[in-house]
Length: 89
Image (cartoon, rainbow, N blue to C red; front, side, top):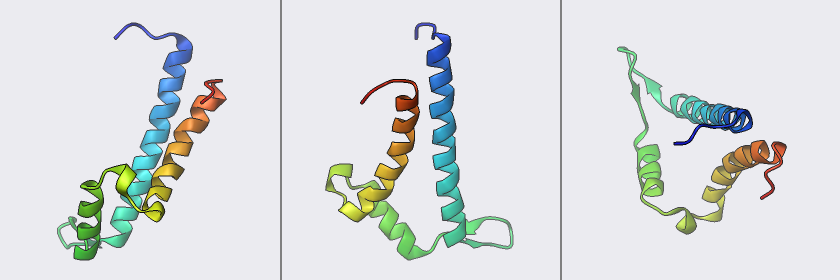
């Protein structure tokens, strides 16, 4: 990969920060809907596992609109960073 300019590096850091926030938000949700076991591990409810496995196996284009909504909300966070840097999409 070629060396990045300071602006490119700053954009990378901001997008990386957003990606971490997205991951953190997801993990918070996952832990909230799961049960903590005595040993510190978590058990995810079977209905959530079945739903998420189905969504994992479904291409984005085939998800229901209500399922796409969350993905769009998260993508908008990245787009906002790019727009901030004058990258018009």
